[in-house]
Image 1: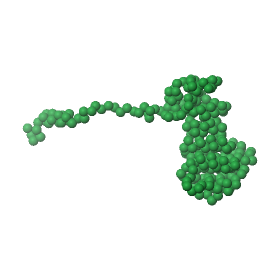
Image 2: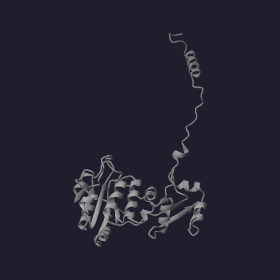
Image 3: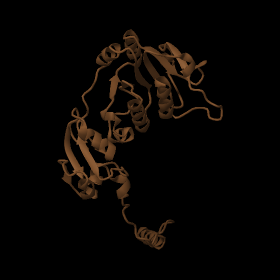
Image 4: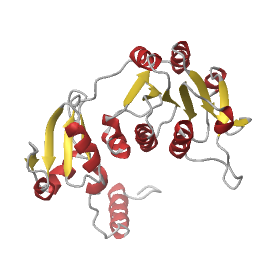
Length: 276
């Protein structure tokens, strides 16, 4: 034998060593978490699922909204005997919706609402002596945008304007947060926010940006007539170009104990002040 010993003997010793040190615990393939991995079925043609009592009821009552399907649990259908819906089990509703969606026993597969152009919005505003349009500068949270739509509808705003990019799509989550307001007030998409502000100014709107460092409060500015109220993203606020294209910057009076408000809360307070 050479200095390394017989080849077959060395192979046998190596096999014995690895067998004696092998983990005795049997290995099983990892199982995906079914709840976390479950994804709702994606409808075709741009349709999406609305869910929750207020969102579905408002969509059902809106003649401009086209519904492909209406699903109700037996319990929800009892109080709506004249609705042309399908009665299904709660698990069937869950299958179409995001995990954890609070659907309250009803969901509707809806086509997107007809789009209102900025030009048409400007014409509608120009025909009024007074009007308020809310303009959002990169507010990306669908729950915030939904809440702003709700406040805009409650305080009589004409529309909410948001950019195509850096803004949430029209979805079930946004409609749920809007609590029916998506069917009552237009959400207008624009390609360029600065050009949109210029178009609104040409239609006779004063463009007022809400900024914490502004000198005057919204009440001190004493705005009237046609007003475009511009709100920026929470944290970053208004972008530089957006600020430069505002006629004035205003703020909400704060006590100093809090640095700022959530953008949807700020919108509600500002809209109330404008109509007050």
